[in-house]
Length: 179
Image (cartoon, rainbow, N blue to C red):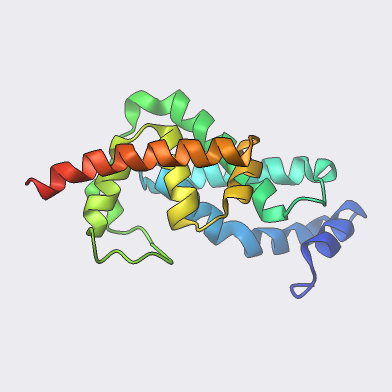
């Protein structure tokens, strides 16, 4: 079953083999947790809570999944919504913690310039929307199209918002160059 396509696994789950949902979790849990971690300031409890809520919602809404979309994009959309809701509810209690950051796992990014610490500090100073766009595009390496699907907007909107987010990040980054 592990080698089956997402659609095949979903079909078996919807046909009553509920235990097969573990294959969906195994397939996507790590990347979803990494994505959530970057949005939720790397606090393990936040990541765990948001990821759990995400997969609960995926399971509950599996029958509503549109197979014309990539399953990963649909799961990212749910994770995105869960993270945004969680951050809004807990905004006063959240902050970037460099000690927690050190335990975070990064993938697929060359962090030689600027340093990891600088990137995380820059991201932590951006608003949630800008941080989310940069994380999805640069750290998760999703395409403009996939990000547009996740955020339920147009590709042109994503391009424009991504450009603005880059400029804000570059402005923050320039303060590191002056230090």
